[in-house]
Structure formats: C-alpha cells, structure tokens
Image (cartoon, rainbow, N blue to C red; front, side):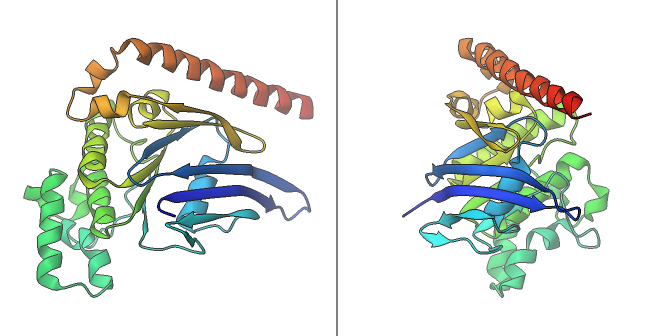
Length: 268
C-alpha cells in the first residue's frame, strides 16, 4: 500500500511515582503520497508525540505506523524531520550541512555537490553556500534545515513547529516556501503548529486534536494551501471561507483550553 498509515496508535508514559499519562488514544488516519497535512490543538494534546512516533523516535504503546506497506520500527531516511530550531552543525558551512546526509550514505561526491547547489538555489541560499550557519539569520537557518531534509529525498517530511521562532514577515515568507517545495517536490508533509492561521494556510488537510488523552477531534479539507502556491498569502486570507473557518477552529480550541483549565482547578 502506497502512502502513510497510522493504525490505532496509543501512547502511555509511565511515571516514576507509579502513575501514568495517556498521551494518545486510538489515533488512526491515512495519508496519500503528496498530501500536506497540518496538525493543530491545545497544549498537551499529543501533537509532537504523534510526530515522534511517525518519525520512529518513539515506539507506541499500541498500534503501528506503516509507510508504503512497511512497518515503521525506528528512524529512517524515508522520513525526514525539520525541528523548530534548525539542529544544524554550526562548525560546518551551509553546503556541508545540506550535503551531510548524502555523504553519510556514500553518495557520489560530484552528484551530491550538484544536488546540494540546486537545493540551495531553490530555497534562496545560492549566494550563501560557503557561509557558516552561525552567520545566518533564523529564517535562513530554517531554509538550510529544509534543504538538508530534502537532500535525503525522504518520502515524508515531518515538521515540528518549524516556523514558530521566526518574526512575522520571515514566517510568512517561509510559509510560501513550504507551499512551493510541497508542489515542486510532491512530498508528503505533516506540519505541527500552534498557529491557527498557519494551519489553515499550510494544510490541504487540517487535523484538530483534543487532549487527555490525545485524539482526533475533527478533520478539515481546505482549499487554502493550493490557492497559496505562487500567490501572496495575504490575498488567500481574503477568501470568504478563511475567516469563518479560522473563527470556528479558534472557538473549538478555546473551548478545549477552558475545559483543561476547569479540570486543573478541580484537581487542586
């Protein structure tokens, strides 16, 4: 079977005091190759836990992940991760960072150099190939992280709040870049975010998760990601359905946060 299948995933963390936390409960969904899905929800709903299970960093308590019919049992180059902070090698140049994965796999040096240079041109860093990463701004470092992920040619790209630390203008430019790369590469992308606006703009599928235990609360299929490819995202926000959907999801998450706060007060 082609694509990513999340089959009845549950995750329980056992604590030293003998108690436990049920982070996820019975989460199931399928993604076809090339789909772009954003995941949204209040703090503690298990978004990052789910992403780490898909990445192979965590083994679920129950259920399994399959990619192209093969069970996920650990990290693999088929699933690339982009973190909130670039997690780059500061002692290496931009070009060396992006080419790290292919070098570790023993890829041809000439082909790797061409591939890396092409990717850096795509993400707008063609003039910064020999710079050290500490010389770059936060937005530029995230561009390097995206290029490094793409250099490994993964089937699935996993993004954990990759734009959360950026200023508003840089974040909007990076959102446009994510959409551009999605369309040009045809990669399957799962993006975790706390921003409702970002989730709307970067998710042809948008998953709203509910907490305690983390589970799928509602799924949307939206036109905004397709509309945003090659277009000013501020124009996309003028779409008649954008504001309505944004307010609906904000109210949904606000109600969840109120419920969480109520539970916390009762427990005190």
